[in-house]
Length: 263
Image 1 (cartoon, one colour):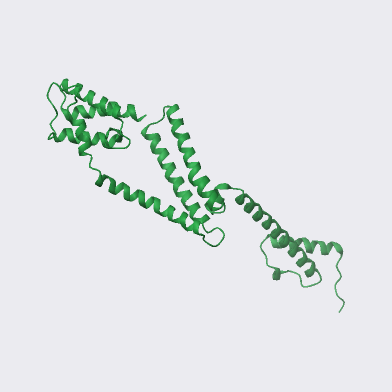
Image 2 (image 1 turned 60 degrees about the vertical axis):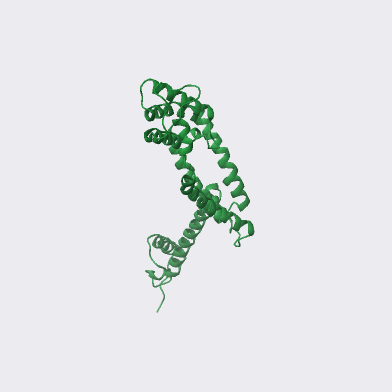
């Protein structure tokens, strides 16, 4: 039986149909031809498949290159090295950023509780991010070193110490004695209504509240501001002379001097 002969155009059509079949989702074994055109159909199918794989690999390489050029992603994966991640992005950058933000807020008069809250949330997010970066960079080369162990201990230890300090310091430090200074009469301006008795619970409560709100009013604190304390006492005495109760006088005085010296 004589085999059927096909022209070059027939072969080209079969090859193009093979390419289109790949694009349409057909498999290689689904060739519609059973004659000499089947081989050209498969050639077209394989050519389209190879082109698709080349494009996919090129796109994957481009995405990988873009990812490797992203500093944030490299830090997150721990690819920047332990020393650089810890000292540059974990120590130096936060210090400079903190000074810059505080200076900007003071210059622009945006040092408000709302702004402080936004900065606080941003700071917390950065701490979490850089902690993960430091943790991962400690084993970036597949093996952890002595300094990697130290860095990981710091990453875990600092938050734990901060948490314990937030719980224990208020227990260890009783503000009662410091608050007494705000309730006792000043030596330079005795109030007309007489000295504030230490037994005045309202006055003592007001003084403790003032110290908790403005820590620099605590005479026993390292951050104590004696000028602010003296001015608060002076205002307290003035308000007592005007007929306010000692507790109310302390609250009003603290609300006046506190924000003033907090800036």
